[in-house]
Length: 424
Image 1 (spheres, rainbow, N blue to C red):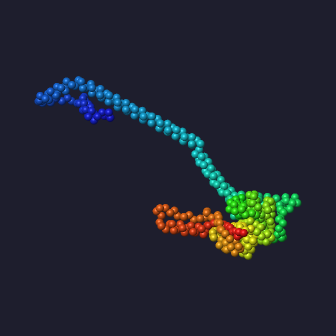
Image 2: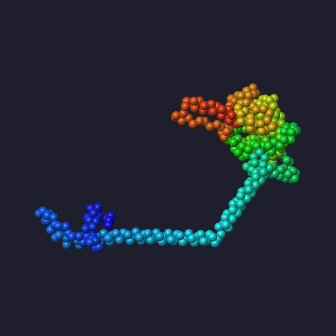
Image 3: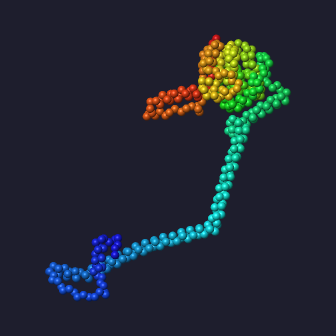
């Protein structure tokens, strides 16, 4: 008998005592051996042991009873825990059996069939969604062929603007009012034929020029501070006259001239001071030194070279001393312009290199000529290589080459020539 609370020495002592007190009742009695002669010390030990036996035996019995009680308690606790675990297993087994019986009653095959039906429905819905998306894309391409669905809002805005302009013209004609505001005293002669040969340039600008409010805000930021100090202002090739209106709203005396009847009609529909006619003829009829500034936004690239030269010479003659001439035009030094916005417009005649336009302005009599570059094609530019502290030496040179390439391919998309007439 062992117990974890007893030391090994105590357990050996108990085992020896148990073996000494255990006798076999059925074993035949053997005659005791003859007593061996013992010494005096041995005899003393035997007598002491015999005298101590009545005291030690009850103590050992109590110790054995305590050990047995502890063992029984430990075994009973382990038995109880085992019984609880058995009951839990039995309960889980019962719950599992009930669930299995319920599933069998419901019908596992029916559940599988329902899952299959749901999967089929999901696939059908995916097909319908794909077909709807394709139809929607087709709708977008039908309304905005070049832009697709993303361009539909802009196309609807364009149609709304056309309808509003037409409505204004119809109401003006129905009321018997003149379709154009009174012209100034300067006679410009009969209106020329529309120079675009029937090309709807008004619609073209609506679609490809960009949001009108954004364009006007950009022009105002670039040129209003300069123009307000040089009045009156003539917008040569003013189109629909938006810039004229912005200048007038800021207290700047300004008017415009354009040969496109559709553009001028729309400008008149908004009540803008715009004249229909040949801009060169209009300048010829103005008195010398009569203007403070002449601005031409994206016009000079539409002019043949002889017409451009005459425009510069007339502007220099009609501006007051110290007057300002501004010509904004696409920048052909940025090659993305030639392959994108420039070739898109079929009325463009020739791209004007900044050096060429500067040369022509100098020959026409302007001085103090400067160039301002705008709108680099940032979204196209190539990213430089990360030149960390451990980068090889060639990385810096490569980044310089990438920057030069970016300037050539994706540099500023517009530039403005700003020239002044000599002072008095």
